[in-house]
Image 1 (cartoon, helix red, strand yellow):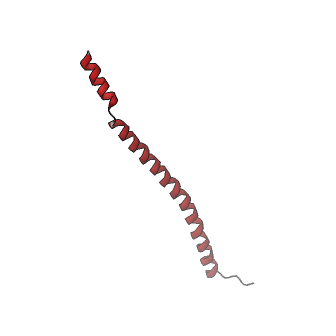
Image 2 (spheres, rainbow, N blue to C red):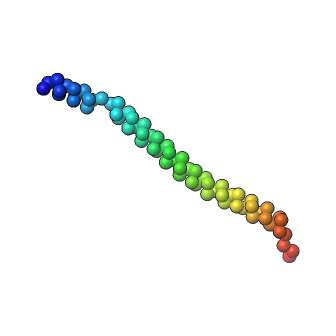
Image 3 (cartoon, rainbow, N blue to C red):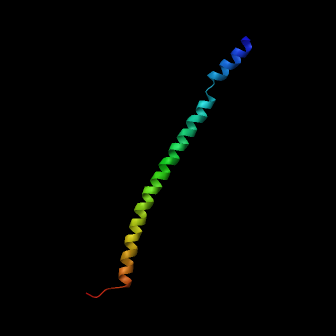
Length: 65
């Protein structure tokens, strides 16, 4: 019975699982930051290139005042 207690206690004191869990949480947070950053930067980039496309289109189709 004491042998079982020692094995369970040793297993409970092991921190290998906590290390893997911490790395998993860290990877998830980094992925979230990347997804949000790409989403925000993608919208700004789309607006930027949309403005350039509008200017180029205006050069191709000049209107006479």
